[in-house]
Image (tube, rainbow, N blue to C red; front, side, top):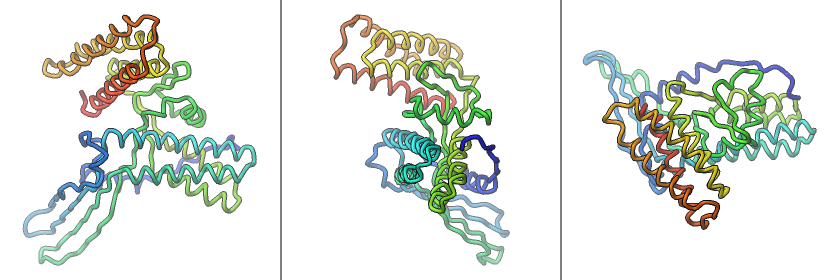
Length: 336
């Protein structure tokens, strides 16, 4: 069932509308500072923008965001998004095996994961009101919006998550700038279009209920081909290389492979030093601090030799690598 061509419909109108709203209200996901999960129910102060000239038509846009997305919440969202695509692939496999019941179960599991993501993401209420020169309201609207682009970090590097997407996208030439390292897949930036994937899963669910297997398979394929985007920033190659190496070092630590972890930490340190040299003086301190921390872990691993560390210490080392990886992601967002 996977041989048919993919028809690429635009859907640009809805995307442009939502993008305009999100630009006005400053979405919380990419820009907010890390916070704890306990802050998820907090409410920010309303943001009000007034457009137009005095004495003429005036438009007021008032937005208020409920909830925040802390470090651990972002990890949950990334993991759940990876799970969505695993369910999509399993549903396609079930359809190939003519197992409609199993396909329906996997599709519904994917939809449940998306619902869980929605419960984690902050919600922004946007109220727009336009008044005429005489004060009469000529337009008024209120709606709730959520970020639709979800970053895929943890889970996305596992071959079983990425490989089916890479296979589905191969013919569409959508995988520029992605490197495959043995069983690992490393990409500078991987994002999922949550709204688009959710819509395709809804179509697949309806098609399965109507026993239209070809339509269901088509919707699932579109979710894989058009629901994920891969980007690689060539101007930040040393920093991207450092981040990739740190992730591989973390995985090596999880497997208690000190030698492999040291090798990847050495690569990360080398690439970070290259990146540090091209930064202005006032931005070098943070990178220098990370270089020091990497060097300390390298030295510790070298002293261990072939003797495996205890599990608590190895877990601490892995957490340190995760923190470095998160910090580099933050540098990318800030254009560091």
